[in-house]
Amino acid sequence: MRGIRDRRTWRWLPRRLRFMRGIRDRRTWRWLPRRLRFRVLGLVDVVVLWTLVAALTTAGAWWGLDSYRHHRDYCTANRDLRRVGQECIGVTAEAYPFAPALNGILGRIEDENETARTSGKPVVSVAVVMPYTSRSPGAAMSQELILHSLQGAYIAQQSQNGQDTAVQLLFANVGEDLTHWKTVTDALAARREGDAPVVAAIGFPNSDDYTLNAVKDGLGPAQIPAVSAVLSSREMENPYLFKVSPSTDQLVDALQLYVSANEVDRKNTFMIKDDREDDNYVANLSRVFGREFGEQYGITPDAVKRRIETYTGIKGPDQGTPQIFRAAVAAMCAVDARTVFLAGRDADLPPFLRTIDDRVSCRRGPDDGPLRILRVSTGRDPDTESDEMRGIAERNDIEIVTAVAVDAPGWRDSAVGDEQVPRAFADFAASYDEHFGEKSDSTALDDGYAVMYHDALTAVGTAVAAARDSGIDPVTHNDVYDKLRRGSPVADCAAGCVPGASGIFTFVDESAGADASAVSEPVDGLWPVCKPVPIVTFPAKRHDKSPLYRTYEVPGKNACPAP
Image: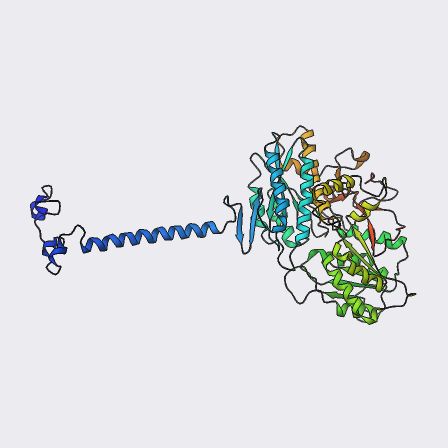
């Protein structure tokens, strides 16, 4: 039988090639046993076949591995979040398990986002730009502050979604050290168009170069307004960066008003400051303390009569051992200081007080008068007002005087109708208790972050509503920016005031020639106008003889509406 293996049957092939006996003709393979010469697959076929299979397998494996490597860099199937180290960086509208403690609030915001998208209303997106993880001691935000910030933003989102335009919140994670801001700002710039365009970003928790670069080199060129909830350093200046918090200058001005009206020792003074120059907040605060109190209160770096000592704060990368106060406290107690200016962050106060408590030379008699520590803060950090700190303060006759942006405990305890209590705070607190009261402790509002993030989003929502009232549809990031700059507290806020839980306010554009007499160095700032700055004392609540400080208010010249 002649088959395809017999070349004599290959009529289509030239005769001289048909019967050429070469290496391809198995009948010439004398070295191979006869029974193997004419098998369906010979040895050469097997080798070729397996070589082909190996090549295909290798190529497939390489393609699969390359695909895995490509996809493993992303935390989500839609590639909104990319894995960088142990963090997932980027922007997403869907709840992602950044940390177990955040799952509940992230889920609520995701549900509210879905409600916004299916409401039939025009929808705008607002990014919450901040860290969503907190693993290291020097992280920009603690897990509690992240949680409280999102809770405040959620309450504001629910309120805004009852208006003509619904708001979708985007989770914009810049990393716990804030370094991945470019990934976030690029993603936000790409979302300025579409069904739910990005119109603004809120958050920005720390006064440092990363925050400023995120606006200056990221959001600013994209013309996206950034509304910070808690920034206070005057170093944080950019035409696209609005601040809900009073500046350090204004917080210190409120302290000045307090010490002028109350009996505060002006001779036995001292300043202890964080020496981290890469932390703009503490660097700016120490400069303001020195400028406003230095000459009058004798806090100078004189080589002989030195009244300033430093320490290394907890925030930021490791540069020496943080929170060691022994040398500073020893020098402070050696000159029997009675008024101490502390230029540092909230987390640095407890170790400072513990060091005083351990120092025998700091103890004074009952008739010597209290040791007053003057400082500024966003709110009343529960860790700095704990039972332990209360005990230390009472044993050592210490009074802590703090200018704050939020005094939630004081506002809760105030009598109904108190004109110094922000009129929108009661509704905010009631809403917070309704949504989170059973799961949170009674001090959850004390640090001020829930209130301030609520007010940052409320400011954006107020600008969106003002744009819609002007007949603008759809509202864009340029419209929101324009409306944020045009509010005024005139005529009891008839011209677009923000009804913040921390007080009614608008923004001043100092670069446009607004009255900047309340600040010592007019710059290109966008700070809140008429924002109240309460003074709180701990452990005892003292009756403050000074009037409530309001930003940019000049007695006898202008007057702010009730907060």
